[in-house]
Amino acid sequence: MQPSTPIPTSSRWFPRKFTLRAYIEQLPLSFVLWSAVAALEGGQVLMNDAGRGYVLPLRHYVVWAGLDWFPWAILAPLVLALALRYPLTRSNWPQRFLYPHAIACAVCVCVQAVLRGTGGYFYAAQYERAATWSSLVGEALGLSPLGVLAYCIIVTFAAFLHLQDEIRQREVNQAQLEARLASAELETLRMQIQPHFLFNTLQAAITLVQEDPRAAEDVLLRLSQLLRIALDQMGKNEISLSRELEFLDLYVGIQKQRFGDRLAVEIHADPAALDQPVPPLLLQPLVENAIRHGIGMHKGSDLIEVFARVANHGIEIEVWNGNSAIEESTDQLMLRGVGIRNTKARLEQLYGREATLLLRSLGSRGVVALVFIPLSSATRQTLSAAVETPS
Image (cartoon, rainbow, N blue to C red; front, side, top):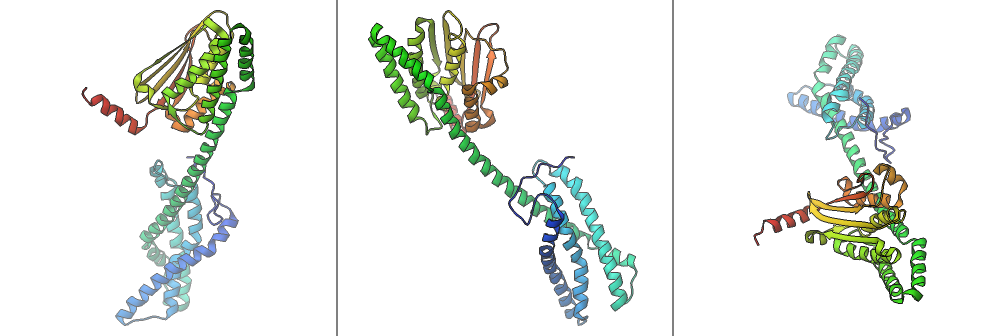
C-alpha cells in the first residue's frame, strides 16, 4: 500500500518527513510529557501504599513508574512520524487501522515490555528481591492495554494535525481559486474586447459612414453599450441569463453589420431559465468561436442557434453552428483555444466539477457547444415549489 502524499506543514516540531534530527529534537519534549505520566502513576501507587500503611523508599516508585512509561518516551516520536505518514482519515481508516497501525502497535507493546523487563531485572537484582526476566516481561505485558491506549492517543493527535493541515490547504486552495477566477475574468475580458476586434468594428463603422450612416451609428452605439456592460460586469461572478442575452444581442448586432444577411442568430430560451444566474460573458466566447470557425472561414450563410433551459437540476445551454467542423477532442481544443479554456476554467471555479463544457461534432459539418451549470439547493427548492403549486 502506498502512503498518501503528505500535506506540508510549517511546524518544525512535527515535520511530515521523518529525519534523525527531527527525532532528536522531539525527544526532550517527549520525555517531559511521559515524565508527567510516570509521575501521575508513581504518585497514585504511593498513595495506595500509604493507605495500606506500607510505604517503600521514594526511588522505587520513581524507577518503576519510569520503567513503565519511559520506553514510550523513546517510541512516541517514531509512532508520531509513522502516523503522520499514514494518517487515519474518514476514507482510509479501516485499511490504515490494520496496516500499519495494528502491527506497529503490537511491536511497540512488545518493545516496551522488553525494555521494562530488562531495566526492571537489573534494578531488582541491585536493590530489591531478584526476579526472573521473563516474569518481569510478563508483568510489563500486563500493561499492554495502557500501551494500546497510548498508541491510539498518538495516532489521534497525528490525525488531528493532518486534518488541521488539510483545512489550511483548503483555505490556500480557495484563495488561489479566487485569485485565478479574478485573473480568468480579466483575461477573458481582454480576449473578448481585444484590439483587433475594436479595430475591425471601428473600420466597419468608418466604411459605413458614407455608405450607410445609420448602420455606422448603430455599430458605434452597440459597441459603446457592449463596452459599458463588459466593464460593469468585471467585478461580478454571476448575472442573470436574461442580462447575458442582452450582452450577446449587442455583440451579434455588431457581427451582423460585418457579415450582413449571411449570418443569422436565433435565441431559444425557456422563461424559467431567464432569471437563473450564469457567469458574465459566458455566451459571447462560444458564439464568437462559432462565427470564427464557421462563417469566418467558409463561404455562404450560417445559422447559429442558442438554446437555454432548466433541466436535470441545472441550466443546460447549447450553442449550435451548422457551418463549422472540429477534428480534435474537447481537451485538445481547451489547450489551444483561449476563449473556450477560460470559459471552462470559470465554470469549474464557480461551480466545481458538476459544471461542464463540451464541444461535439454534428457530423461532417456542424458543431454544438454544451454547457451545464448546476442549480443551487435554494433555487432547486424554489423551482420545485413553483411546479408543485397548482395554477
